[in-house]
Length: 429
Image (cartoon, rainbow, N blue to C red; front, side, top):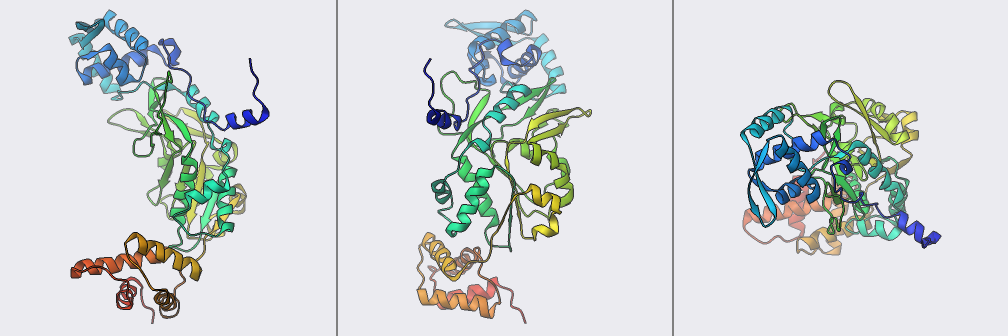
């Protein structure tokens, strides 16, 4: 067997490992046969008459496994053959199977893709941890090309991303903390990872894949890969003031009777942004106390109904974004654990002008350089405000809205901008 050189090995180690090959028997799935049978029967009940190929497609399993499930269900008189399409059986649920399916749906309404085992999930997440992905200067500059930052600040972002550790972004409102956190996530999103549809633990189902959060990669899967996993861009999950301490644990749906993974589980191998940190319904110290172990040891403990705890990886970059001073929301112990603190300040005149011109160009507008200087002076001297990155877009929006009301094309002239300033800012006496 050929051996990899050190350089080849280093490059190979940065690739996200694909899940094990598609299982071709029930034993190879790593999930108890009874669990697979129950899901197959619910799929048959909810989906109507199916072929074995259709059943395999719905459960994301190989035809061989679907055929074994069909044979077992048929042996228990839960389904019957209604015809053949070539050599593929067409199957339908029986009255006995219908009664059993209704019982199963009372216990859990989960149907669709077959789950993977907790052990497989842990192994896969560890194997494709973000810390194994090197972030280079070109990656950061590309991700932040739509924003205006100096090289020193961009270097801080790159260092934080390579650390794989928690990051604290702070600064006054309107300087771009949320947009920065999202851009940091997009740097990692260039890499693809595997996300399971669901994880099975002692017969209980935890849904992980979320089509709202997880974006399938363009080359989603190939060959004989296990289709119970979806190849996605590294996820970015954002939570804000709605976050509660309960949301950080498994969410049991009392109607559907299965679990939904918490934000940090859905963000595994990606980025979790805690926006407006310090303004959540959970106290900052409670949230950080909850994550003492995960931030240090990269493991998380989740509680199921009945009190059982399961251990999962905590392989994600946590970005805290706040307009509060870190010292006011974090005690020294947590300040140490969050090793990267990046302050985003007000924009310089040059940065503000560059941002304003970009925003104006996006709207098909132009602005005179002298008028921009006058606008900066008005904001600073008359409105007593620092220059913030959000002001250009907000002021241009005011100009466009006023023009729309008056039924004319927007123009960035002195009168329109003064009107926008008076509407947007609160005048101090």
